[in-house]
Image 1 (spheres, rainbow, N blue to C red):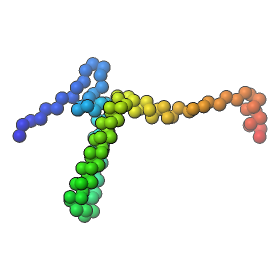
Image 2 (spheres, rainbow, N blue to C red):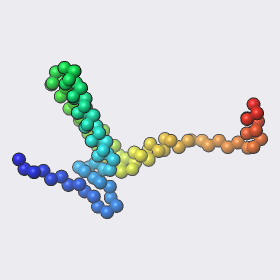
Image 3 (tube, helix red, strand yellow):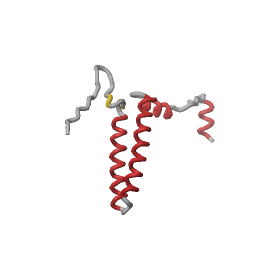
Image 4 (cartoon, rainbow, N blue to C red):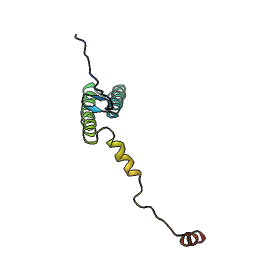
Amino acid sequence: MANSIYQINKGINKPVEFKGLKAQYIWYLGGGLVSLLVLFAILYIAGVHIFFCLAIIFSFGAGLFMFVYKLSRTHGEHGLMKKLARKAVPRVVKSYSIQKLKKALLK
């Protein structure tokens, strides 16, 4: 069996990229694969037939790969974090004058 050598492409001021995945999406894929391994162990210990376990794990795994690669392709290195941060910004900031604020507090 030949030794496999995987290239991790990283230039100066460029994100880590592995097989098309950029930055934090590598960690998301790794976490998803670990959770699939745990799911397989739970199903196998529970007594579910091995072919049924494999069918579930392979289908969820394919969905996981497609989802993470889609996120990496559409949002890029920091795009998903920016999208989540944008949801935390309030749409409207209300400003009251001093008199209205005093009336509101006295009520």
